[in-house]
Image 1 (cartoon, rainbow, N blue to C red):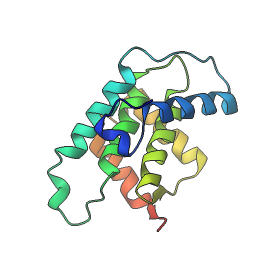
Image 2: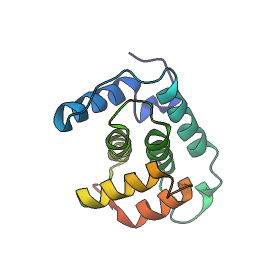
Image 3: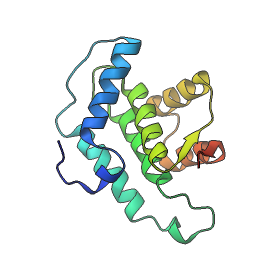
Image 4: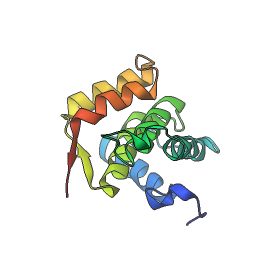
Length: 141
């Protein structure tokens, strides 16, 4: 189902729901419906960050990375679901980057530790997320 939101070129609500259910099926935990408007809010904030970024003109700017980083940060910190938020945050970020022909090189342990740091508030800003992700980006094209 499409609501015509501008971020749907990279990820849809249906894709996020699928990623959530797949993660819960694979790793377990109590499934829940998201808090109303929570995922949409994360998507909107991430899209605004990408759209209004002043870094677009800078050398080394990677389109989609800012959106993916903000989405990772917001999904991990807003706790839209009862369980599985960190796993979903990583899956959403990966999904978005794949749409740009990118992936992140990190072990499962590194990814888990990183998402835990975000969720616990040890990583307080999306700029820190970008600093962690950028050197780990790999082009698939």
